[in-house]
Image 1 (cartoon, rainbow over the protein chains, first blue to last red):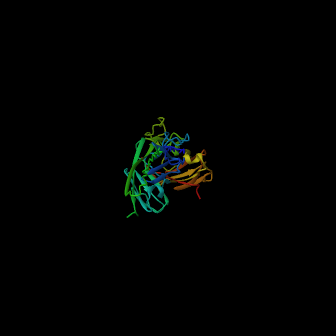
Image 2 (tube, chains in turn green, orange):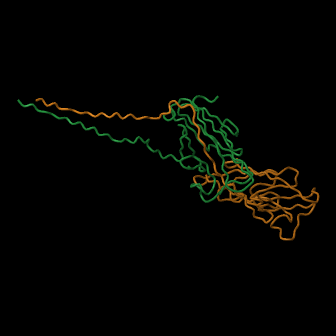
Image 3 (cartoon, chains in turn red, blue):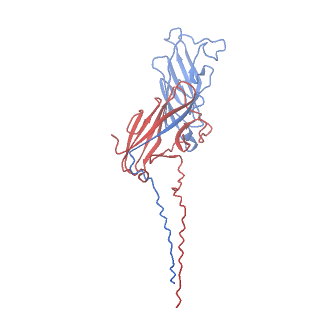
Length: 158
Length: 181
């Protein structure tokens, strides 16, 4: 009596699955701690994948006119930055986003607040709000850089 | 002899550590804004001197009718007492906001001078009846500026009650998105 031997060879192929999230080519999107930071402003661009506002001839959007801002003047740009609590990235239903200026000539405002060096916004699940920027240009000519910090906390703003 | 088929199963557990950030409490990032501060005739809302009585002083538009003006030609030191002067097209206001690349983006410009200063402003050409084609003379005027269509601003200097000597008046210029209503 013959016994057949069956060899079962199990080959397990291991594929290296690159779990890259599909690249959505949104114009100017930056993710900060899960918060999506975007801008629809023509003055917005990216610098090393970080969202930035650049009002100079160096901005790829520069149309050939309007080289910058006047000295000793005040400018307000509504809805310059939009922040969104994308829950799939933050995992938090409620977050507090605080945008704080580190420059006395740069202020932020929303539709409910007047320009101030700090603006705090509570965002619920997948909620987004936009923030305006106020720039007080100095009297000197030349390039100026204003810095700000974005803090993201879980829970409502206090 | 029994042959046992050895089945070797290699199970590799591939566990993916997905950082969903479900436990984050705090995050911080720094960002920047860069602007170029340029002279009044090159910026988003240009103020361009046209007459030699107007010039850019450290990039800022200045109207100066005196020998201190860099354009002073060596004659005409100032204006007479008890006389009214009208200067058309002292400077232009242009709309060079980048939004105009994608859409028609007019702005409403308001120019103010203090009352009782002997100075009035107007926009467009001055008419013989004392009006002007775009905005009539006054201490506060408003007019719409479209991209590619600069508006000229003129001045009325009424020196009737003014004393001799230097007079300095501050002009305030404001602009808002959208045409004037």
